[in-house]
Image (cartoon, rainbow, N blue to C red; front, side, top):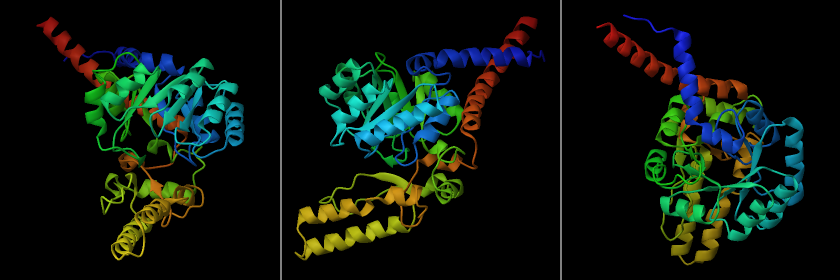
Length: 359
């Protein structure tokens, strides 16, 4: 059999990968179009800077921060990296406009608006201030609406992701949205943990990807050691969505590792429902009691290390997290996996062509 020089195969693979995510890299200003998912209490200055320094795109999770704290965190992140990074803002935050102005004043290049449909006012504040705005599209109709509103890029995140999730898988969302929206770059998220998966979405038309769970056990991540150990021990089947027991009391699904708190949440729902049925509690008070169950639960797990009574928000790709690694090693591994898949195809195709020519 004719042997194709390995160096030539790898050069071809590298060129192909560079072409596939060229749009995403150009938009983000990166070497690799891999965004870090914004995880509250986890995606802070150290992890964000590490992702950006490794060639990816770190995204700072604002969460419930007030404007002054966000300004300080942005400044601290800039002291750790001179590479581009973004800030994730929750659209339900009561001080959203002020937070947007903080990002503009700090010359943040990209702002991700999550947790709902952003208003035209917020998009205008950010874009007038020079920031590129990224929005989440859980369905094609919403993606098209966001594009019409002036959004600069989209993230489509499937139900395999950790934290608050929708009802549709990443693979289905990608098939629905990637062929239909070409006006802006689209980044795919949810359940991605290997380079081969990244490659598959790039070949479907994605500009890049977003990963969260894969970075939790990065050496630079400040999450509690016990929080990280829980991720390393877990399998994909351990990351389950919260369950709603009664349609009268809606529960927004949150995917997390099952623990004692998961069982306690079920028991709390049953108790509250029984109180309502007995007339001991009105509907509004009951809904608040259910919603408040998880208050502070993520901090208890990620910061304090209470992995039994806190919330271990994790995507199903947690089963692919098997060890603690430097952030740069995680990104290099993902890239190498994508390159290996491309190289295998290029090698097979070149050898087949060489054999056909010899015949």
